[in-house]
Image 1 (cartoon, one colour):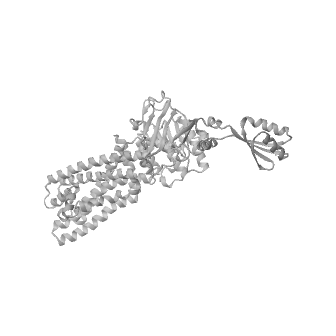
Image 2 (cartoon, helix red, strand yellow):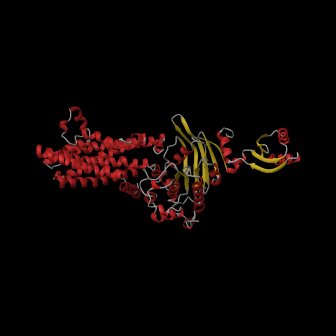
Image 3 (cartoon, chains in turn blue, brown):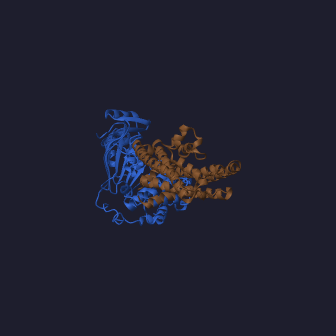
Length: 332
Length: 262
C-alpha cells in the first residue's frame, strides 16, 4: 500500500543532525501537574503523563472532561494556570517554536483555509514549517493519501472524509515526531472513519510517529492506542493499556440458548445467586464473573439442560469508560 | 523572526485575495468607485469654488484610502483564518505572533501600494489631479504616517478580535470610519467645533491632511506637522503593540483564542 510513503526514511535516518535528541530521549512529551482554571471552574486538574517515543496514547473522557483543553495547552493556544509541559526534554513555553517545529496537530474541529485550494493550503504550511522540497513532499503525501486529483480543488468543496485526509497530510508535512489528534474521525461515517484509522496506522508504521489521540469512540481507541488515559472532570482517573483497563471489570455477560425447562434453569441460577434475565423463553442472559462461566455451563448441563449456543460478552473499553464516568472505578 | 514564515503568510494572503471577490470588492472596487465619485464632485467644486478648495475632496479621499486599506488588511486578514477555523493551525505551526503581525502589516502595505497607485492614476488621467504636485518627500511622509496610524488602529482591533471573538468583527472594517470626520480628511480642521478640534489634533492623520491641503498651493514640507504626526504615531503604535500583546495573552489565558473558531 502506498509505497511512496513507505519509502520515507526511517526514524533514525530522518535528519538526525537537526533532531539530536531524537534517538536518546525516550519521552517525547512529559506533562507534569498541568492545571487550567477558567475563573472558578477547574477544567484540568493536576494532570501528569508521558508520551513515550513511538507510542500512541489515547486520551478519553466524557464531554467536558478536559481533553480538548489539555490538547490546546499542549499546543500553546491556551495558557496553563500552572504545570509544566516538556517536549524532547525542552520546556515548551521557553522553546515554543523549536518544539512546534517537531510536532503537529490534526482535528476535525479545525479546518484549513476554505476558499483556497488544497495545494495552496499545504504550500503555505510547508513554508511555515520551513520545508526545503515543499512541492515534492506535498505530492508524495497526496499520493499516499490518494488525493492527488484534489490538489487543485478548493478546500471548502471537499467532503468530510477528503478534508480529514488533507488535515492528516498537513499534520504529516513536517515529518513530526509527535502528532496530537483531537477526535480526527468525529465527523466521518464509519466506512471513512475506518479508512482514516487505517491511514493513521499505516503512517505510524511508516514513520514511527508518536501520537496523543483523543476520541469518544472506544473501538478506535482500542484499535490504535498502546495506552489509554481516562480523564473525568479534569482529572486522570485511570491509566493503563486497553486490555489492562478492561481487566479491571470482573463481570462478563454469558448468553445461553437452551433446549429444556426454563424453571430448572431459573432455579439453578437462583441457587447460584446469579443475576439473569430471559430475553425469550429459550435464552438466558447472565451477568457473572469470567471465572464462573465454566461451572455455570457444566452445572446447567448436569441439570439436563441441553445448551445449543453459548455467547460470552467480555467487558469492553466502553464498559470501563462508562463505569469510570459514572464514578465506579477511580484509581484515586 | 524568520523571513520564510513571513513569506508563507504573504503567500496565503495572495491566494486568499486572488480567490476572494469580497477582498477585491472591499479594497480595489470600493477604492475605484470612490475615486470616481469624488473625482466628479471635485471637478464640479473646482468650477464652483477656488481650484484648490475644490480638490480637497479628491485629495482627502486618495490619502484616506491609505488608512482604510492598510487597516482593513491587517484586521480582516486574520478574520479570514478565523472564519475558516484555520487560525489555530497557523499558531500551532512554528509561527510567532510577531511574524504573523509583521506579515499582515506587509500584506496591507502591498495592497495599499497597489490600490493607491491605481486610484492616483485614475485621479491623474480621469480628473487631472496629479498627486505628485504635493512633492515627493511630502508624499512619502504622508504615506508613512497614515500607514503607521492605520497599523496602530488595525493592531488594536486585531487584539480586540482575539480577545472578544467574532461578535465584534464588524469593527474590523467599520471602526476606522470614526476617524474620518475627526481627522478632517476632507475639510480644514477649522470647520470642526472647538472641542472636536482638540481631539482632531490628538490624531496623527489630522496633521497629514492639513499639511496635504497646504501642499496643494505650496509643496514645501510642513516639518512641524510632520514631526507632530510622527511623534503621535510613535505613541499610538507603541500603545497598540502593548495593548495587542496584553489582549493576545489574555485571549490565550481565557481560552477565547481557541474558542474563536469553535
